[in-house]
Length: 469
Ligand code: XIL
Image (cartoon, rainbow, N blue to C red; front, side, top):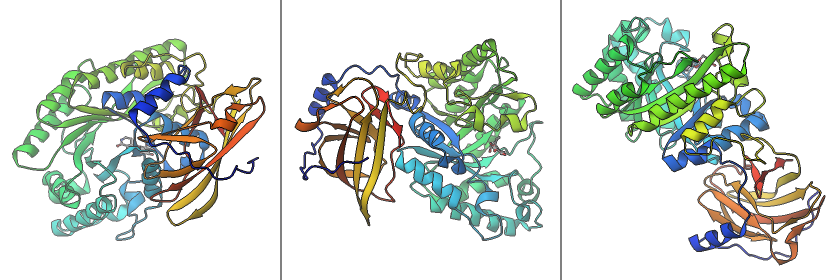
């Protein structure tokens, strides 16, 4: 596999716009459509997915989560039952893992969630507390959880689903013991725990204008009038294909007009199984409608889909006979809904001729090995081998990847390496400009990094995405 590197020759280029422009002009046009996160970045929009930390062991899952989204939400790992299952016993492994993943991939994190009647351990749900005791329990939970990720998690669902389907405050331990003031109290606690964080309340069935979203509108006005630190409202967006409310945009607008940031926090648009082409097309129109509604209102800052692919969606487990609610299918193939989002974000809304699809490993003709040949404290030496499995030589190759954030390449050999933001582009030096059919080139570099060094989520050789081996 890896060949012995040539004697060290430092050829790291310092990046200037001029160098990058020259490099871009010299490379063939990119046939591959940009991933959603790149388009969203251009729109200044957050395009997220709910991610489950235990699924990050799966390379396809990890790659897709990293490649397609610029924001992540913990699907379950930050909920009270996961974080503090017993009084005072905190458990961070799942939550930490996703926070590290997001940092490595330059993603924002939406914190979900602190005060919620569900997925609440029974010591809280069934505890008999005085108001002072419950306040103390909430304060400890909010302060410890937000405090741990201060500076790392930018936005939080402080209170989730406090109002029921009947548009009345939901019967929860929090409401029983503290009355509706528990919402304002939670927000004050959250502001004290992390003054920089943006604080949301979040719920389902409040996407359009209806009795429940009216109740939220009143609640938001009340909270703001009494000086509670409410910054945003999350419309979860658990929707049914073909049955979307027609006034999503007006609803977003009225909350934005209160000065609140609005996000679609848990979007999925489910259908009755089995899937048909017609249903996929309806769903694609539904996704367009939601994306357009958010993009039309300047206070709407992002859309997060509730799962990376249909195979990981909560829908089939919770809604009998329904599923296929997400833009990427069980096999990591882009659905029509994916291309709707792509187009709404300013992309061409279609697959390029050589595009292997969202986060996919490619056609198998290009393979990359990324090995740490030595590691110490904050540093590592990396050796990269690029294998050309195609039938023709690759001339003046260009390998790109997203550098885990906090990592810096300090010197390189056998390659000219450029870094722009988090994008790294490695190109040839004089003696390895061509990769023969079935042949390979190796190059190396030294890095410094903030946390543990990690393998990037994906590589592209020219316009083709590579398999990582
Ligand atoms: C869901 C998760 O997706 C499931 O894995 C879990 O079994 C139940 O919770 N509203 C929310 C989310 O705020 O936390 C829920 O997530 C979906 C509904």
